[in-house]
Image (cartoon, rainbow, N blue to C red; front, top):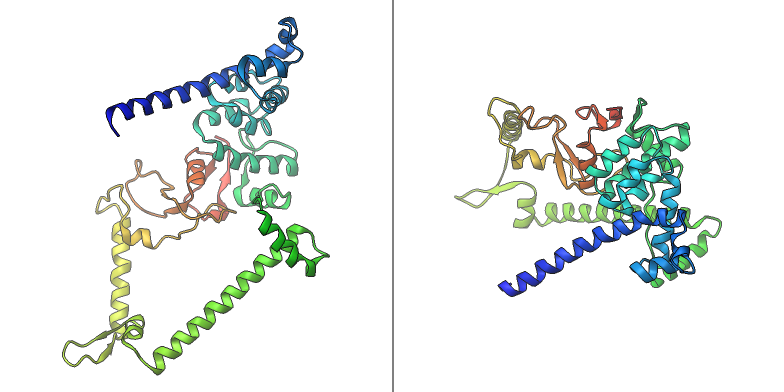
Length: 339
């Protein structure tokens, strides 16, 4: 980028940021305009006409702002955050917040992303519907795994995918043989069948490779079977069980040394430890790929790499909010607990 291009880019980004702030401020004023009927006094036919002509706000945004205001009727602090945090975040929180938990949700609106808020409000809503009371921000506590089951039973924590026209045609063509099932159950059965077929195919491929390596013994197969060629006569020499056990002990010892405080590890997680950690998020109910490796006991407090947890970006953020306790224990024992 030239200096001129960079200046145009910065100016555009600054105007975009100010536009978002301006839109949030306009939306925060709409409830008062509707309550006092200012739009009528100004000579407009409706609040929608008023918002569209003066601020370019759509009917959808106006309806959303008024609906959220009704839900947060006695929660002035949360309503005031629309101006700084945006309507989307407060809309998510409005589904579960109450006067007693207002302070808790105000803090989370300031410190969490929209996706992180969406995740924990799903669990909060599931707990409220099942138990008839609030969980987060109160003195109540519950296992994260149990709340996840509540969300799954109520159908709250489901993956929503919009199918293309071709995908819909393919789905309904396959569903003809499963007419007695609902769309959701039929799709689940199809996916499970695909997994089964994939497993059978991989097993058959593995058996073919094993047969080929035993019968023909090509040099590539020898390498796969962890064999090495002698430098003198190029004959394959297998590693003895003793050598393998010694290597295993050395590797385990190295991992233990790296995880202890004696060597004063740096914040960087060694590749040997990183490779030994799962590539799937360990948060109950999550199957997303690992984005971060989490220190249950913060590295700043105790400089070690003990009992690390693989997490996706959203759940890594949630665990750093101090709403999940006993993070060093097994994932099924994690608890949503009061601050």
